[in-house]
Picture (tube, rainbow, N blue to C red):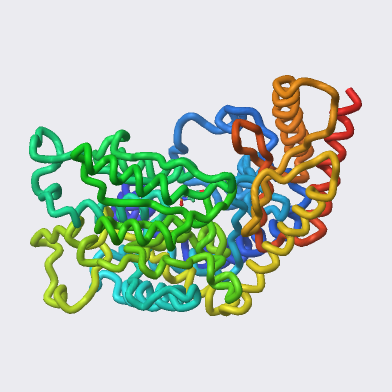
Length: 497
Ligand code: PLP
């Protein structure tokens, strides 16, 4: 070996990426691995059966000094990571809002990671920018939403709603972007309204925007967990009399606890009367509007100012992808656009740049996976899957309703069933309430501990209710029948004690 050769091999660390051959080999292996994972997923416990800290204890506290072979890394995925996963892709995942990825969505993610574009300006990602506009227009058409809406993709509904409220605030013309809100005697209390069933992301958006939690007034709901529009109108009138400035209402189509639908047509009229922004949180239920006979769920939404829906909840899109539709993109732009010299481009006045519409500069190429999903399944295929989920939920709800030991706790407009066990026993109402709460929690934990299914709960009218949400692309009637058996087994075992 010559001196120069020796020197370079001793001094220079290896550079460059994994060799193409190795990438190809492991790429195929990983796709095989995922295909096998989906085939064997029902053998895995849905809810991770690990204790807190168990994974951390098995991982080295410091990073490896030298690179390791992919074989070793993948072996650790099997040995360490998989046992610590809660399997959201399991067909018996019924907790929270059940969701699922899909093969075309996974391919979209993979390609997007390969391209690794930062979709901030049109020129940094013409494909991402233009595909996003086209695919969101397709989705808008599939939902039967008015053509006056333009869409933009964010990561989550929490972030979409925060941006919608920011646009609404920009619309009050109080120079908040320029001067902020603190130390200003000229600003009244800016009020936002949402029902007491609204998702906590609305509270978080308000906190993030510096409006303060007191800015959010929670409106009571009716017996079916829908916002009471009359109470909303009264609250706005009262706030106005007291010198506050009501500027935004958030209505929910598909609330988190029960999937109830606020009366948007009545709410929209109130917003129009007071020149207030109406934002619709349809994060969960919005995708159901692509089913032609369910379009009515968005009644009134055409007159809203903005609407969020999450394809990552119920459109078989791998997390994350949330869509905000907005009528006044100029206000969103006014709230967030900031173009320093280094981002100025010759075409900026003719094109749309994603970073003008939000807090992020770089944005992932998320439109690609949604485009692939819509093309692969088609409008019909997607609608058929959502329709089937709703059928399964109604079937399950019918078993609950017919059983003397169980009861339905809320209407079932989509694919979420809220229910509880209520076996009879001679006792006072107070004792009964406590007994049933404890019994239902025990049933849920019992079912979840089997690893065969995973449910979650909520509280409705101060009573524990179990939630069975159907949203996974692999869920069939067999899985619904099995979880019903498991629930009844738990009830029998617990009642026998
Ligand atoms: N809005 C509703 C009605 C929800 O149910 C949820 C989550 O379940 C969210 C917003 C928040 O969604 P994300 O996790 O995308 O922020």
